[in-house]
Image (cartoon, rainbow over all chains, first blue to last red; front, side):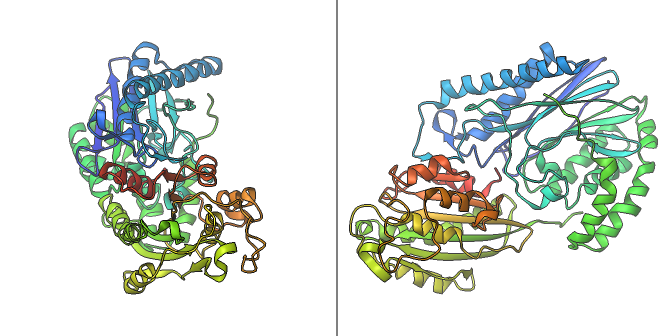
Length: 314
Length: 226
């Protein structure tokens, strides 16, 4: 396994409500991003340095996933095992959030109540990788992707109310339909896939993709920066700059390139796709900037290869 | 793709209880109303959410049985900042008087607010209702006997809930964009709204100022995605 690339940007310095955890060794790896829900978790706790529930939740959930993954994290071999592990992981994260909330947040009930207030709400998207198989575990609208010579593929379906189409959700602030929190156990879903080598496995919070006008631009962002870079670290630096320049929200992206010997080999496998992408899906849409209907038409042509979100279980 | 920015169209409807019991807090509430829209724009701006268009509408409500034609006074939407002066004059013109018994017709005010002519334009939106009241509400329809009671009002709480919850069933508020911010006591009517409706933030006081940390909590809940 190669090194993991980390891109993390906070809109308000030191108040970023995203978090992550990661691990990689010779045989296996895991990546996890979390995004504390700033609307639902806006309550600040004086006992915790006036941090918001969202800020705390993201950190706790990322750590809870790491603890679970180090002990139990694998790629399930069948559906039965997958369901079992999903329940186990959902329980593990819920108990961490609940225990923390009961210990530290119970005293401060406050005068602000209502359905828009939850204790320690967060999304989570993680992936465990072993050899050529990857298992995505997620709740909420943080996403898991794989990028290979055929382009970028979204593996996790957003848990939002209404349409889950990756283009349409960019133009609505759709409320989450599933999230992790300390009041009620959320559902973590699972999607297992085989990886083509070489490829890049990614997890991202919504700040990475929601500030771009189309899902095609996410792939372009990855390939553009890959083209400019001469090493993995340089690719990471380029991505950091570009994500920060675009971000209208906290944004966290973790990438693990797999199945190649040298950086040049990775580039020569993935970059031929960039030209096709630019010609078919990027330049035409950019030329008609603001024409959402046209962008939607192009998206519908791009979508069949991109959308690999079916068949989740958990 | 640098320079690409999603912009927001924000509509707010301010519902202000203008009955006699509000006399001691009405100036405070009016000031809150005037400050709130500035604070929301500024908070969204801090989070790189650019407000492209802002409109505010004002509803002053009392009690149909006790106050007749003065029970529900509403403005059209004011475009801000262009019509800021008219908006200030409208809010400043509200006087606390009347009201009759203790509960007021706050749910009817909410019905009017939900059925506002909300913006459909803009890439992203916020449809925000802010309610200030120091009293519980009458049951919806309690004041039907009054001649000024509006036709077409939701017939009971369940129907009003449908107006709130479902864009297709009479409401017209965008599912993703809507927020209800209640500054009202933990009292009949409001506590049901607070516990049964989605996307509600209930600040259980109207007469006391919020601590800075509480006010930030409210602004974050309104401005952030959920």
